[in-house]
Length: 290
Image 1 (cartoon, rainbow, N blue to C red):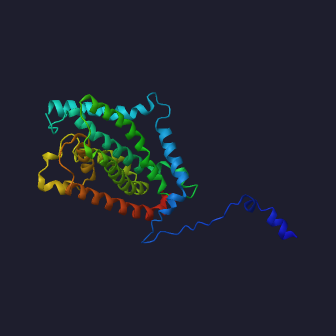
Image 2 (image 1 turned 180 degrees about the horizontal axis):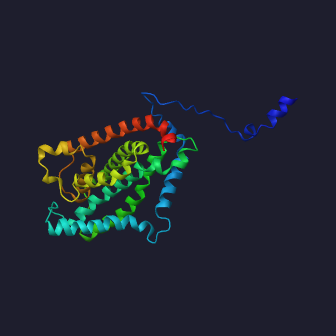
Image 3 (image 1 turned 90 degrees about the vertical axis):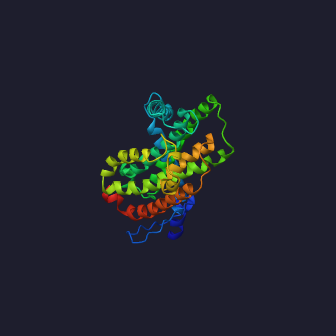
């Protein structure tokens, strides 16, 4: 009689909630990625993206307008210094749209990289209190920058209409170049976010890293200035193919991506996979070290 009463009073049985056990193992030499956990915790992923977007523009006057102003005024400065004063070649298109077409994916990359690199340290209170796959944090920080990219794209198409430039038939490849930029930012961000937990120097070095990376990417200059025999090596910087791919697909400048794009995709894939394994190996120590 008592057993039957206990079963009837079990709230978990009444609500149909299934109990599950999560086994947290110590770090090993080879840690499985277990990417299926990301799908199981997709609600947390969506919540973190929405939270990051709200926090970014909370108590600001212009709000999402900053997503447009930053690349737009950077384009103006570059146009004056490099287009007007330095007379930098722009592959036959007006320098302002030449620069803005490159700054659009570059801003997406920098925002995603910066947010993901600082994501673990910024979510210290969440990591030390609740268990969930830590990979969700840098992934959501990377994905949150896509909204700014979409907003800033409106200005680009407005500039194309102003200069009477029609997108080429290769415009359908733009999502592939966007995906390459996000994958690169996420892969590098995984390495830096894990290192940032142990060494806070990463936060100080990150602005310097992105500044040097900007000049190693054909943003203020065309890749046509690079000798042809060096293009494959130059393509080891994935953002070089992203920027040139944007210009080729939208403006028709440059040549069709070839060995340079293959080198960039291979480099981005290597950084992403190695970053996933390094992050998974180090995440067991985040709660203690952060």
